[in-house]
Structures are given as C-alpha cells and as structure tokens.
Image (cartoon, rainbow, N blue to C red):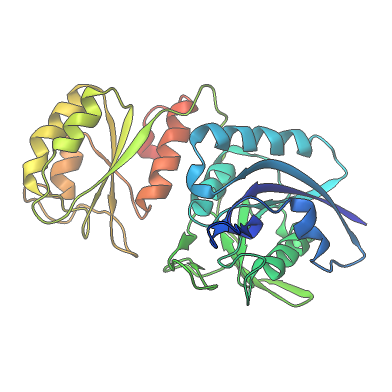
Length: 320
C-alpha cells in the first residue's frame, strides 16, 4: 500500500460556482471533496491536508516558503511515498520550479490543477488529480524533481509553461517535450532530466521583478526598481536578448548600485547569446555586468534568481 499526501492550495480545481454572481470562486471545494471523486486504485491511500484555499494569482513568495516547509515536514515521515499539490494554473509553473529548486528529497512531488472547475461540464479536475496521485506513487518517478501532471502528460518543472488560457491542454514544454504520459492505469517515463539543482534557503526570498522590453522601450522601470531597493531584476528582451539601446544608461546605473540583473529572451525557444556587438545587444549588456539567462523564461529566471540570492550564492552567472 502506497501512502500519498495530497496538499490542497485552492485554484480552479477547488472552485465552486457562486450563486450570487454565477461565476466560479476558487478554493471553495475542499481537498477531501476532490479526492473522494477520483476512483483511486486500492493500492494507494491518500491523506488530504489543506494548506491554502486561494486562487493562484494570490500566491506570493511567503506562501511558497510555507508550502515548501509543509512538504519538508511531511517528508520527515518515511512512510510517505510521494506528495501531490493541487494548485491554480496561473502560477503553477512558478510554484513547481521553486519547489524543484528548494526540496532535496528524491520522492515525487507532483503538481496538478484544472482548466475547468469540478462542477463545470467537461471538467479535467478529477482525471488530472487521479493521474497525479498515481504518478506520485510510481517508483520510477523518484529522482525526477518536482513534476507537473496535466492532460495525461508529465512535465519537468524547469521547462513547463502555461500556454493556453482555458484549453485543457494548457501546458507544454517548448523545445523539450514532456517526460512521459499517464494512459489510464499505465505510466510511461520516456526521458529524465539530465541534472537536478538544490539550494538551501538562508533568508527570506528577496523581491525580484520582470521588465519586458519591446520596440522603443525606455529604461525608466529599471531606474525605478533600483531606486526603491529591489535586489534583482529580470530584463526580458526579443531574440538573442536585444534590448532597446536607450535602456543602457539605466542598466549601468542599476549595476553600479548593486542590482542583480538577468537577461532573458521573450522567444518561446532558443537562448540569450552573444552574437552581435551593437548597442543594447547581449554582448553590450553582458559587458555592463548583466547575467545572460540562457534559455530561461522570465518567470523561471525570476524564481531562480530569488532562490540563489536567498541561498547566499555568489557568482550567480554560474547557475544560468
């Protein structure tokens, strides 16, 4: 018998219709109510615990740390085979990557949610939850880090992204694909991550924000972020990391004030790379002290930079 702990944090998967507005209210359905409708195999037992009952756009760094500490406390029980976290889809990929970076245990952590509420016609809530619980109990899921199970597909936290606002096939991993599938009662793992990273937090997660550049953007938000004392900033730019040249004076100012800046691309695939030498290029930004963010999305780079700084890591460019 495999013991799985299911942690409910709210989101669409835990929503009910509000009779006053006729709209869905996230977080009203308890984890116990959800689990009862999953028709689980008799070889699995589920202990349901509620952590938060909130829509995922209400998640902050504070909740991330609370969730991490809850998971670590549960894993102190050796009889637990794995953990499932139900979560709203809007910030699911960020929470998943945070847990992937900060929890060292080899046992599976599987995150899932739904695009359609449990009471909505054609809901994906129960099938996603059932398959996530089965995956958390699967021996070959050990050592894969935090996983995301959605629409029968198994994703690595590092590359999973929400790409559709409402469709049940809402998550993909551009350029890398999914790790495996759950097909009714069968689980298949086709590939495994090359490496895992773990960082022990030594202090609170610092505030990090994202500045996205487009045609003619100014650097005023970089200036503002520096002046209000942010510790880090993600600058997202087109292509190989080609920012408008007019931001460069603000970048220089931020770096001089000790700001940690990571450059990412807004492209769905490919990475930031030194290829050109014109003003505002990745070369120009790197020369100014900006860290090149490889193929990280801006959201994942933000989570990683916050974790690195909270873990007391120096030479952060080594980790991107």
